[in-house]
Image (cartoon, rainbow, N blue to C red; front, side, top):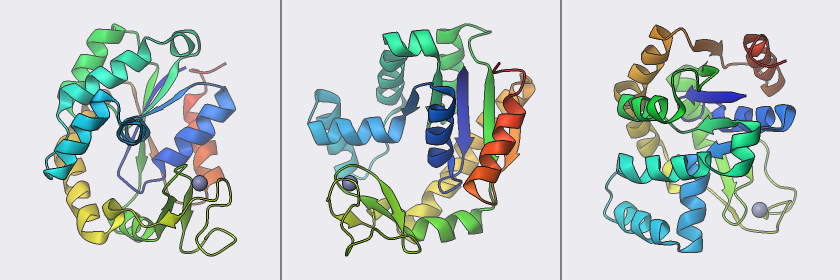
Amino acid sequence: MRLVVLGRQGSGKGTQCVLLSRYYAVPHISTGDMLRSAVKAGTPIGLKVREIIGRGALIPDDIVTDMVFNRLMEGDVRNLGFILDGFPRTVAQAEALEQMLGESGLDRAVELDVPSELTIRRLTARRVCSDCGAIYSTHKPPKFNWTCDICGGEVVQRDDDREESIRKRLALYDTETLPVVQWYEKRSLLSRITGTGSQSAVLKRIQKALTGVVP
Ligand SMILES: [Zn+2]
């Protein structure tokens, strides 16, 4: 399975990618996770990214594209396929990906459609383990005092999950990534999925759309 999953921040995209990755046993490639772990590990890319974020600038296309393309060349991805999460974010990246994979290199692009106001409500409630990245929320906190159930790390609200940054990123999605959605639609590769409702309801909708793609 070679899949791109698109959706606004807070659309549940990350969660659905994890569920799909488990269900189909296909590697989940999340640019957000890769960038965060590069920063944490202090790799050359990580140091560069930290510096760029520190200046309040956007991470340039080529850094993310290189990182994703390197990952796409690894053995597990070549054998099993991939679920791309956070890439392509722009039409330029979608074109680069098409060039890299070849024309029949992608099975489907799924867009999770969720109204912005709902994603804002979801995101401002989100809390994340600062060590392992496990996701919680104000409705579903860890069992003990904002300490991660999985690793014991501190569970916090990320700066990106504050309302002002969320609104900025949603606007960016509309200007940069909605054209990517249309780009896949023109190539008849797009499945638009209603992203509201329970996680399992959304997962079922995606699986239904993938029938014919996945045996
Ligand atoms: Zn944790």
